[in-house]
Amino acid sequence: MEPYVKLNNKNGVGYIEFFHPAHNSLPGNLLSELARTITNAGEDASIKVLVLKSGGDRTFCAGASFTELIDINDEETGKVFFSGFANVINAMRKCPKFIIGRIQGKTVGGGVGLASATDYCMATKFAAIKLSELNVGIGPFVVGPAVQRKLGLGAMSQIAIDANTFYSAEWAQQKGLFTQVYETVEELDEAVKTFAENLCNYNPKAMSEMKTMFWRGTEDWDQLLIQRAKISGRLVLSEFTKEKLKTYK
View 1 (cartoon, rainbow, N blue to C red):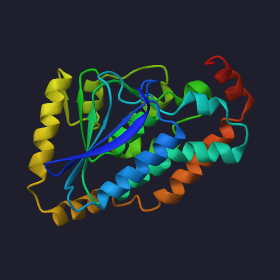
View 2 (view 1 turned 60 degrees about the vertical axis):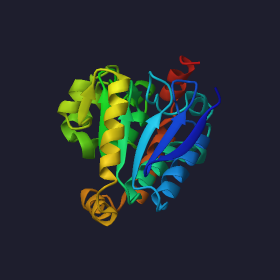
View 3 (view 1 turned 180 degrees about the horizontal axis):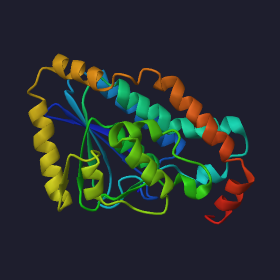
């Protein structure tokens, strides 16, 4: 199947779904489309609540595109590349509607950042998480603020340093990333649908004000996440990372 980002409005719930055949990794063009779709859905009066999901039954998101990562040869290109997830996270942060995360499977790197930037996140028992960036000589600089906000500094630093390990969905629930963990994808989908449609009965203005309250203290993220993208853009050009990336070709 071809990569895509699509939005479906069902009963006032905007389902935003992304897909890429490489385990739902996200190249720059998909990240740009995802950020635009979130922003546009936030401005659509017919949509009361958003659900962020990915296609397929296995991996939620494998993070950034390794093909594009390997091809970075200058700092400006690196900054633009790493700004992709920054722009999506900022679109989610500034969206005036609650975003529910539907995490059906493993999620890595930038995918953990997306899950952390949702306002209410539900998962299956297969939704293990990993911050793998240190493995290639960089770090979770761009997604770090979102992950730290949701999991706390202790848990975020644990998975950022232990970059080889997948942490279970139950662990992620204990740390506050997931609100509920379900046995099957079918159970997850039914729970997400019921929960999202119930939220549609609430006052949109009240939910918008609540979201602003929840995200208080992140007003500098437009600048902060781009600064973090510049750090990653420099590190990806280091000899260590270039040699490491060759092993992934």
